[in-house]
Amino acid sequence: MNYTAQNFIRPGYETQPIPDFPHAPIDWSRESAEELANTEGLTLTDAHWQVVGALQDIYARNEESPMKARELHDALDELFHAEGGIKYLYTLFPKGPLAQGCLLAGLQPPAGTQDQGFGSAV
Image (cartoon, rainbow, N blue to C red; front, top):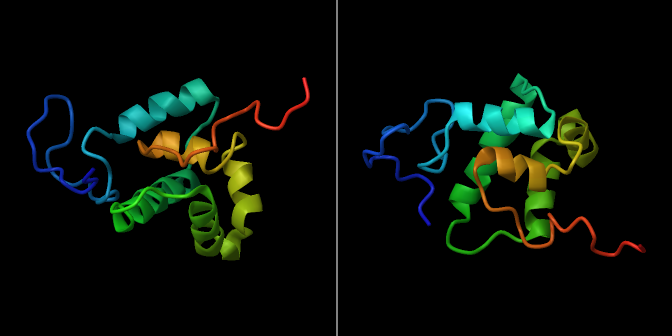
């Protein structure tokens, strides 16, 4: 899947790269992310948008192979180390920076990041 090819004409979507999000999927928009955030109970701040852009960039650089949860976790931890790393990202995305962040960025989360019941004793 080519996340950077935004030169197709598609009604209702950007036809050129979005200035702040050059690696956004072609069917992604800030408005759709804001709608999803509302359903998730989030109000998006500049900090959220930085993470969304970072996720899109990471995916664009690794589009040849599917992202693994550990690789994405480590990449985000390193990128946002000065702010507090993964702990900081959990303050922005309480349901998980990988699962919830990818959802808002219009990306497929890595396997195993969305299974709420895995390992639980019910």
